[in-house]
Each structure stands twice: as structure tokens, then as C-alpha cells.
Image (cartoon, rainbow, N blue to C red):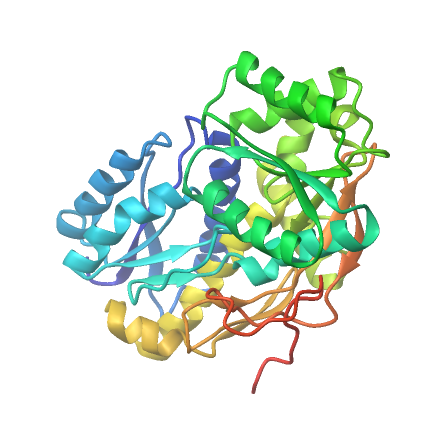
Amino acid sequence: MKGEWRIGILFSRTGVAEVTESEYFRGTALAIEEINTAGGVLGREIVPVCYDPKSISAEYRRFADRLLTEDGVNVIFGCMLSASRKALLGSLERRNGLLWYPGNYEGFEYSPNVIYTGAAPNQHTMQLAGYILSRIGRDITLVGSDYVFPRETNRLLRHLIESAGGRIVEEIYVPIDPDEIAIRRAVDVIKRDQPAAVVSTIIGRGTQLFYRRYCDAGLDPRVLPVGSLSLAETEASKIGPEYCAGHLTAATYFGSVDTPVSRQFRNRFFKRFGNESLSSYYSEGAYNQVYLFAAALERAGTDAPERLVAAAGGIEFDAPQGRIMIDADNNHTWLHSRIGRLNASGDFDVVWEAGAAVKPDPYLISHSFDYGGIEGRMPH
């Protein structure tokens, strides 16, 4: 419809990804509301068309087709799981749509129909592995959900850890929506082997079962911590901080980041969504990408995907995590790498952070294996 910018929203509010994708949804909604209140983009409001794919890959594809063919949408914001993103690629490329994807992912992908605003492997995976090897120990167990992101991430972790003189004690997978029996078996293996640390790529509802069982099994994070690539504040609050305190997460943002922009974001998020919602790197990442989109839209003057992608290169935004930028070379985003340890109050204490934004290197073309990753100053 003339006079508005229609966009598609595909974040699941039910199913295995309910908790995390609901955070994405809230971050997206907050940014849209703020932009529209400020006058929209080029005098036109952003109007979302929302569907709930219920964490089912086929539903993401079905709704993407509907958005692109029936709903007058060129641009979609959505997905957490890599399986969902990959399910959309054919539709996006066939129908010339553009996906803004906020998820941390396994890397080794590029599509001209995707803007990747979540962390690539050199912005979270490498930092977590390096931190564990240098600060905790060299015998590491990998545990993950059985789908593409954990499988590919663990393939990379095995290479990095073994190349640095570490040892993978065990590599364990549980179903993407596991029952308590599968989780108990995984924890029993960890308890038997007693590695120095665990790296977890379990996602969704399985995360809650895993941390509770880990604690109930008597495994002490002071002795055998779990380093996660997904656990955030909202999920920890649902699990119970008493089950998660002492464990680590690698992320680009924590709600405890104490800067004026971060404090303002937390306050606006709390005011809009109340006590039930904590800001995290999920909500922050989704929020950021709407503002990046709005800036690219203003520059391009059109939501035609190829012109938006061209306009997006070099776009910067003062995000709660720090200043970020879309890299014109690979459609990924310069982000701020951090490692946090969850405390008894359910907040993350930042125990390490990069000294500057980390340039995205999704194919790991040039990197040094230390937990600083690739740091650099964003070009101006």
C-alpha cells in the first residue's frame, strides 16, 4: 500500500524456539514503534506483517512465500535456527526477497538475499574456545542439539581446540527438542568423564532441561563450567539463576553493559514489556537490525532488495553493545565480542571483551586463534 513500508516478521512465539524468538520479536517491535513514533522513514511508517512459524522449518518457508507473493512484502526479519534460515533461502532467491537475520550462526555462508546481523564464528565461537583454553583447561566436552548449527560449530571447535593442543573428550548430541532421558544421558557422560569444561550448543527448551539436570547432578561450575553460545538472561530467568550461576556465555551484548546507550535501551525495553522481559543479546540484536534497515531504506529510497543491499554496506548504528556496521564485502556485521559469567542475581558479569568491534570473517579467511578474534576499527 502506498504511504507505508510493509515488512514481514517471522519469529516463532511457540515451539522449541519460543523463548529466544519471542525476544527477537519484542526487540523488533520496540524498534519499529520507536521509528514510527519519530516519523517513520522518509515520512512513511513501517508496517509489519507477522506470522508465527511455530519453530517448524517448513512453516518458515511457507510463510515466506506468502509474504513475498501475497502480502506485498520485499523484506523479511526472522529466524533463529540455521535450519529455518536455510529453509528460506530458496524462496528468497527465487522471489528476490531480502532476509535480515539476527542469529549467531555457524558461518561459511553468503547469500545476496541475506543481511547477517548476528555473530559469525570469529565473533563468538573462537572467543569462547580461546577463553576456556587459556583460563580454564584443555580437556573439553562438546554437547549440542542435533542440527546444522551445533554440528558445524563443533566441527570448527574440534579443529580449533585440537590445533591449539587441547583435547575433545566427547562430542554429544541430543534431539532438537529433547526429553529428560536424553538430557540425563548427556549429563551422565559429562559427569563420568570430568573434563575441564563443556561447550554447549543446546538450544531452545532443551537448554532449560540441561542446566537444571547439570546442577542436580552435582556438577559445580566453579570446577566444571559450561560455556554457552546461546544462554541469555531471559532463558536463565526461566531456568532459575540458581541453576545457571557460574556458567559462561559468549555474546555480543549483555544487559549489564553499563553505557548510556545500553541503559537507555534497557529502560525503554522494560517500560514497553514489563518485568517479564529482560533485555539480552537476542532482543538487542533484533532491535539493532531494524535501525540498520531503516538507515539503508532512507539511503536507498526504496525497499527493492538489490538496492537495499547496496545501500546497507557501510551503514553504522550506535547500538547498546557499541557502534556496529554492516560490512559491504560480505553482508555481515561488525560486532562487539564479550564473554560473561552469570551471577546469582541472573545478570552476566563481563569477564572479557574485545577492545574494539570485531570485523566479520564468516569463512575464517584470516584469523589468529586467540580469544580476541579479529579486532579492528570500523572504516569511515
